[in-house]
Image (cartoon, rainbow, N blue to C red):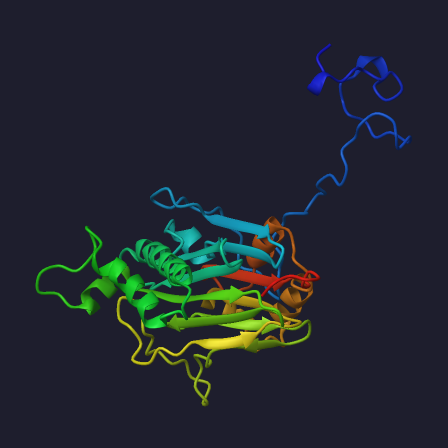
Length: 325
């Protein structure tokens, strides 16, 4: 009889020589599976009315439908998830969102970039990936120099990565707007630093992706809403490789709050945070969820909301006694 990991059969829990791992009434008895998956555990979370069910079609290339990441340092807990929206799943198209979050080990700072490829751009998923990689490298270079971050340089490096791309970049006689039609992407990028008085975040954006703090009861937007005072959507979105005329970083203390950075696939259904989606994520984000838990929640089903969704969350941890800032 073959048993996994060299286990020997226990006649009390494996009658008639069965090789199944049966639960044991004795806590010190035969090993068993704890917290097994339950029926329906991974069914989509439905917010109000669900989208109609369908089988997702594969994207044309190797980009995965869903990615997630997460890790912990002495100063921070980080979670990231990016999921393909139902519109792209149904059409068999790429997820045009992308995100990256890395640790700057010399300083303990968290660097992040969240991108939303312009839906009409022919290679938006490429532009989103390139912009994020370039922004994260520029941030790391800035921190390595030990000076304040030159935010214009960070966004310029991200834009230049699109302009220099061999296949989709700038061609003879073209302008940045021509590259935008192929590689256009929004971006929110920044850094979260540990300090003696608590964590602080500094971030900039190009386009309409957003960021918030959540203090356990309220979502507070860090950038002006893309909705005008009359409730109409502002369609004048600046997308890389074009740069905003004014690049002014937002600085915020994270004392008692989690920092959230997301694309409009998350921000639009969240709204001002007082509705059902705010209730869902308010409960979820009260403490860091498992990596797969964030991805599962982000993939909630709600009729008419079918865009890609991406969310990065950074929780400060309590300062260690005697830690340097």
